[in-house]
Length: 131
Image 1 (cartoon, one colour):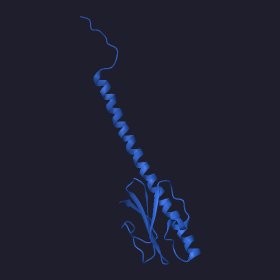
Image 2: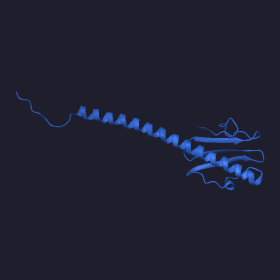
Image 3: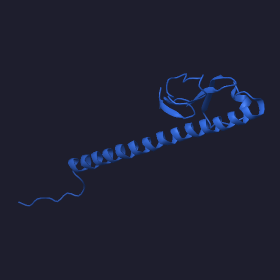
Image 4: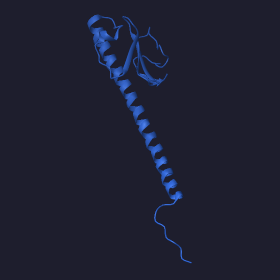
């Protein structure tokens, strides 16, 4: 008896290739997602540093810190939301979040001001966490 030779792939071969493609796509997605989160945090920290610099310039000119974000004249990153929660002559506190993300960064300056979200634990240092 002669066996016929068939051209093409078997069902098992196709399923194996699909499974390998699935595993590779999961690995690539995880790496992409991690680098995206790092980029978001870098954006948040950069915006907070810009706010801190702008607050010091505002303090030099007005002898008090700005209560309103519009007073310090900074342009945050797109979709970034900076909130100054309190400010006076001795310091301020503020936090930042990019819309639709759970990560927030916070900073406070001065001994009489404290962290409004509970993220920042030290004055004049930016702290980020999922809130």
